Length: 221
Image 1 (cartoon, rainbow, N blue to C red):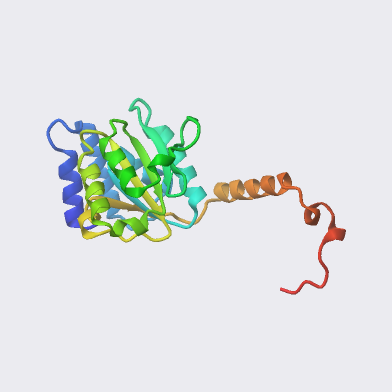
Image 2 (image 1 turned 90 degrees about the horizontal axis):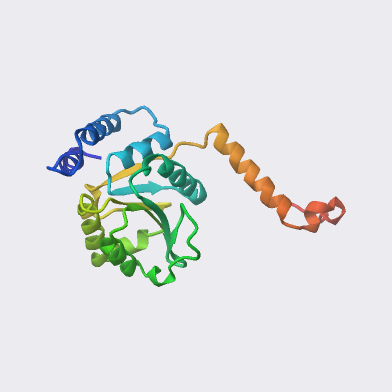
């Protein structure tokens, strides 16, 4: 994030009656860490981003499950006492609450433009993870809506997380956003991945798993 972005980020957070002195100091410390080339723990970095009242966060990754788990874990620490909800969106399913079970997704919000209009109008503060939203950033209406949502953070604390394998932001949004860089999985994360795969493997009945005699022969790779 360049100088303009940092100036915008800090000035937005220190506007009158928008944040406390402690929150402004937290944001300043986050900006200082951004200039440090030392790799950051993604959990701590995301927690700092959310505590710094960032309205737009970009995560470029193909590890969708890992990113969702990270957001869910960190949100438990930062949303306490703030009334934030945690949501995820896909174009196939619509909008769904992640932190509590409210039933199925809101499929009427599967359309990208309708989703953003909903986020702009909702009084519900929270973290909204939009999965594979990158194709819809080419639409001027969507860009304007995201800009309105980001600039309205001081009225309703909504953080939009754009998660995809690649996200190219328009210039109108780049200065409002911060990018979360994921490091390689830690030992604990690797263990969790292996455990999940083994659990799914054991739960799925398969003749190839239960009986080596059923394995195909003369298989070349």
